[in-house]
Structure formats: C-alpha cells, structure tokens
Image 1 (tube, rainbow, N blue to C red):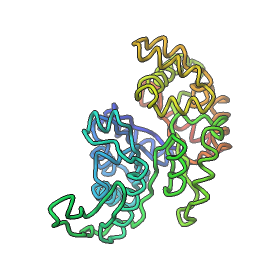
Image 2 (image 1 turned 180 degrees about the horizontal axis):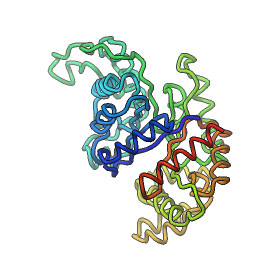
Image 3 (image 1 turned 180 degrees about the vertical axis):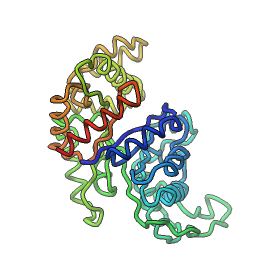
Image 4 (image 1 turned 90 degrees about the vertical axis):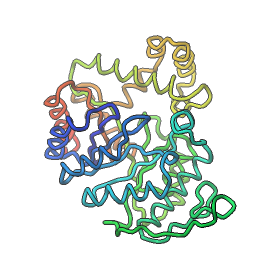
Length: 347
C-alpha cells in the first residue's frame, strides 16, 4: 500500500515545503494537492516539483468543467515534465454548486465529459491530433458551433510520458463504474471499508469487467484524517464537523453525493437529520447527528493498535494508496505520525 500526504486547499504550500521534503525522506510515496474554489492546485504542484526529487505529485482534484480537456492535457504534460515523470492527474466532475456557481459553466453531461476528457488527454499525450466528436467534448469545434476555422493540432512539446496516470474522483455508482473502467486510479471519499462493498461493489465489478488490461490493476486511492495517539477527542470532533459539512452542506437536499453515499452505507435516517440541521444553520446539532461509525471507520484516529487495525481493514477492502491528512498541530508531530504509519505499512 502506498502512503500519501495531502496538502489541503487552505494550506500554505510554501511553508509546507520543509515538511514535504522530510515526508519524501521518510518514505511518503505521493503528495496530493487539493483544489476547490481556492488557490489553484497547478501552480502549487509546479512549486513542489521544483523542490522535491522522488515523491509522486498528484492533483486531487482538477474538475473537468473549469479547464478545457486540451488544457488539462497540456497542464498534466507540463507538470509531469517538471517533475521528471512523477505527476498523477486526479480529475473529477465536482458538482453544480461549484461548476455553475463559481465557474459559470453549465454542469451538463458530467459522465460523458469525464470520459471524453480522459480520451482526449491520452490522445494529446501521444501527440496525436486533438480530435474528438463526443457528446460533451467537440474538438475542433464544427462550423455550426464556431467560425469554422478550427484546425486539428498536435501538442508542440514531446511529453515525458505518453501515458500519465489518471485517477477519477467518483462516489455515485455509475461514476465509480466508469472510473474502474477507464482510469488508472479511483479517488473515493469517506471510504468505510466494512461497508464499501454495499456502496460500490457492484459498480466496481461492472467497471472492472470492461477495463482494458493494459491499464493494470485499479489504484484505489483513499484520503483519511490521521492522528495516532491516546488523546484524540479533539481530532474526532474535527473529523465529525468536516463530515457534517460534507453530508449537510456540500450540495442541495436531494443533490448531495456525500449524503447519497452515507445513505448507501445504511445511514439514511441519520443523514436526513444531519441535512435538516445543517441547512437550518444548526452546525453543532448536525455534527451531533453524524454517525460515529462513519467518522471512526473512515479515518485513522486512535491509538497505534486501532490505527494498525484500520490500515488492515483498508487493505482487506482493496485500498492500494492511503493518503493521510494529519491533524497533529506541529510539523515535528506530523512527521512523527507519517513515520509511524510508514512503519505500520512496512510491517
């Protein structure tokens, strides 16, 4: 199992460089940089590419609506070149609240746009003409949609690799099936290993049945909050508040992918309460309604024996990369935590 470290969109990447370098030294395999309606991840990844040597670098995630497919291909090729072949392209559809509310782009045909974006990226990396007449992606634009002067073009530079690993963030069953079919990796959130099969088992089997063997095994890449120790009440409280935000506030009622996932886990009644309270402005009450099993099971928060058991549960559920979001409050303590988890994985 690979070990990753996430830099959140609220983190100061420049000040995190010493930690990232130390994480690279102690055996962290990949550093992921998040992007929401925040500072962009791309400039930060370029900065990290210049100050690291071995560790993988990944976007988690770039949405497929705010950048054109060709720009995503160019960006990934550029980052991969700067990093010496260490970049992994994490993509996702995001949701209408961000895509339409922040970027002003219609949230239309998200599954088709993800699939066709991946297809065009791979063609660009092979330095083939950027040509795709899809449902969501049409390159070049046909005459009836533009000036008629669009010309098929190849990427000017020669990419360091013609196959950059792609991981897709997906929660809904159809999106998960597509990710398992077309991508090198899958990026789920709130991954609860004991209930993952109920939520995603059929979708993963469907996608893997259509998967090209040349893609290799699917990298199941989960992100979890981390605190190893005995005094973990504050960390669990923070993880619970974050879960309440996602279940209650990330999307509208009836259009919240995280709430739908928790319902598929079997927490439907509790999720309804979380949403009611959160949308009414009662964030403390929403947090109080979040199922403890979801918070504890989808995190690495507890003493060493507990964290070791949770890592084993993740491995048994098919997880191949675990990226941690440390909740320790100093860089020295974060590094200790990373070393502890690295030792557990090696054992």
